[in-house]
Image (cartoon, rainbow, N blue to C red; front, top):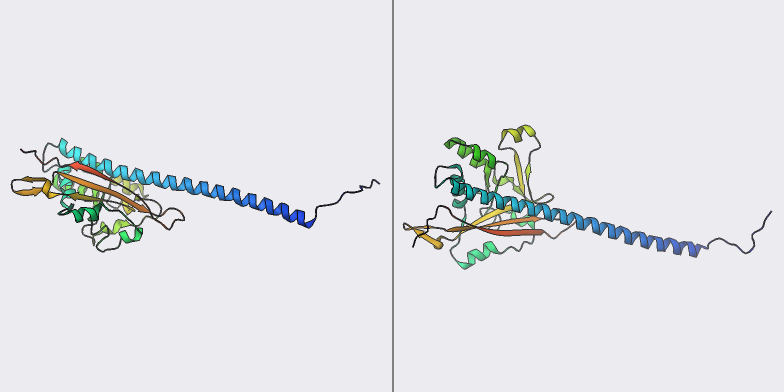
Length: 255
């Protein structure tokens, strides 16, 4: 039998010290991994929100350019849609009005959906259903055009309508929520769009920019496209917004 002289096991203090060091390293690694995951989630949500903003901006540009292509046909589908959008725009009469609309300091996303003086309902907010825009292109007669516009232009005016009830706080990130039912999507049913979460558009006009035939009209419209949502684990709202100016194709430049 061989005897090992002078060898001993680790003491309790040494074991506790090793476990403590390992625990600190493990906690630091988990914290770094958690922070990386959170940053990646935030980046993804921001990208998706920007895509939704870009989609609304491109839809508005498409409506305007299609209106121009109709060559002032007031009965055309896009002429009527443009008129529908601009008829519900904010009228700016003084500097304070534009400041109220342009300012975008959001303390909570919930406040935007409160039916008061500062919510999206009082600001005549709307969105363009980009999936339904194709139905507007295909519409040819008066009744068909009217129905297609009703599916394409989703507005909070009046705030008691079924369309207004679609606007709600984002459950994840700003988006237009569609039905998963392929039959509804393929049929172009108005029920395809299920909700508008965390994104909206406000149209603003200045009637003093142009006067034609004694009637005040706006030469251009500013479209404020805005989003508001809560990131994963965040209590402070995340917001992204942009403003786009489009000139009214129906305005004839006069000297």
